[in-house]
Image 1 (cartoon, one colour):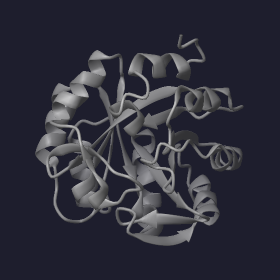
Image 2 (tube, helix red, strand yellow; image 1 turned 90 degrees about the vertical axis):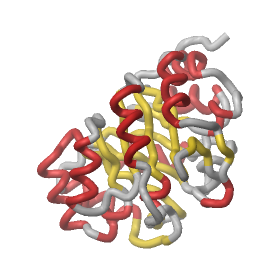
Image 3 (spheres, one colour; image 1 turned 45 degrees about the vertical axis):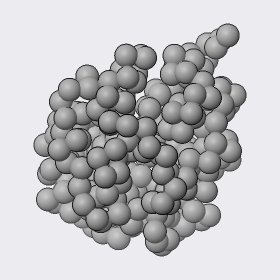
Image 4 (cartoon, helix red, strand yellow; image 1 turned 120 degrees about the vertical axis):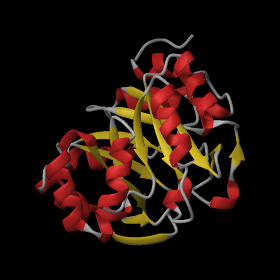
Length: 241
């Protein structure tokens, strides 16, 4: 599996939230320096989130541009990408790909067109709350997970980022059952997100058959539950001792 350390930006700072709640943040400093730190520790990818754009209250475009240009990492960018203008700005940063979440539910025709036009540069974020999808920075819940997934399969979506919102930022473990159901129902590559708390969680993900293509890790790395080199070894199925 590919390991993608997460850098979530809120008001210009790198933070981690619990279940996506804006007031729950822990602050971890300058996002560019954090990103460079993950590169130095062995990361090749970065999951970069503009939380202010996701919550429709602003933008961290300058910080994001710096990170994409200077961190030396492949970047998966998400947060507030809901129309042609925001998609064009995101792609223009030079990021490897963008994640579209809310628009996949609220603007399905537009989303389907974007998938057709940009292919590998588009991943769809399925932020799962029960059997529904969380949108608008997880402040709303709408749509049916399985209906949306079937539609995305039909239009040729190549990659999904699947998050159990009840697990995200909680350090309570991953929802393996949800991931297994999604993987079984789609030909798209699946990136797992939310709840990774230990190397055992990563080992369990890597042992799935088939396993997710990648895993996004946030709080567990920031709170030093394990190191990034250990995570990279676990994701490859290697010993972490």
